[in-house]
Length: 479
Image 1: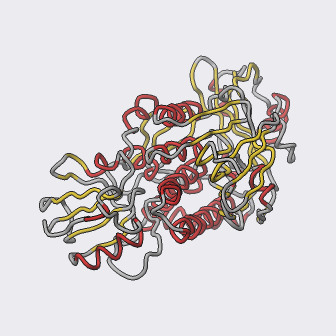
Image 2 (image 1 turned 45 degrees about the vertical axis):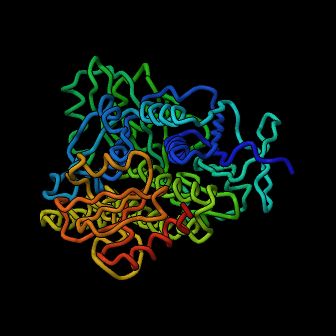
């Protein structure tokens, strides 16, 4: 068998695939991205980066670039679009939303991956593959054959990789569909305001929001469920608007049109041997709360260093298996919260009554904060066993004597933050950095952070630390 040309081949160069490629390249892994589209998407859909994803950008030194192209917005009004203010005291210095055009965030992440050495082939899609003990043989749609050590499907909701892998994708199909686009509107703003007043309380989601120069963002329930593979037409929008508002507002000259359904599905497995799934290939759900892109980015951040560890020889199958063990429950929780939000947006009397009750409950600061933290993913805690309340959670950015904590994580290595000055990383120094800083604003003596920013150990005992270094970072090197 020929030696694999690549360590990891990734199907799909969307946000998840590009982020994963960059994470792997931080460790020198040979990466190929196969993207079926010959050109980046042209339509400009605005997406939101939630708090946890903004933290990931800061950890890899990307946040300044993102903010050059994005717009900060309050971390508020996400849950079922219930209009409540941002809760006070969110545990992050990045407690805001960044609205950014999806093509821009994809381009920034792709450029980041390429700058780190990833290869991207556009117009090339995975058509089939076969795996064995040594690697995966991949066949592309244009007949090319290549050899790789691992294959990761980041190829979206209709993932070829998932289907060819035979992994079940149980859940609920789309029962309703929503149209979204940007277009010119042929009536005055005053008429629009008068017509849509109150409609959003009965039909959700629904809005006409001005962008300027007569262009509006239009979101309206579709009349029936169409073919998701086919883009909607302007006539679909006209029909939906007439059904909801009694007029089509003279919509014309669309910039872009899209549709989304409320299908909710979760892959039964994230890994089968040398083939893995991430992003929409592993989970789909309604876009309520804007969690989909963020969930995929966070999958990539969790998987990247673990897959690199396996390839570099210091990681184990047990470490790689923690990808599914940690991320599958997170996705299941997101699917459940979108189901709940969908129910709250129904026009049925019971749902409207429940929405009214929850709207009252969100006046309690604790309730509002809990729901926003759920959407923003800063409440995620992986199960690392019993211990300190920080164990398994991500650590917020802190001021340290060398600047800020996240600034020390740009290279994707682990970090020992030591307030005692007595701890060390010994034979793990090729994988884990050590910062002795008694001034760090923590109420613990020392903690070990994984490359994804989650706290893996807390304490002050070197032997106990060594056991946890072995658990997460393999055997110490001889040097």
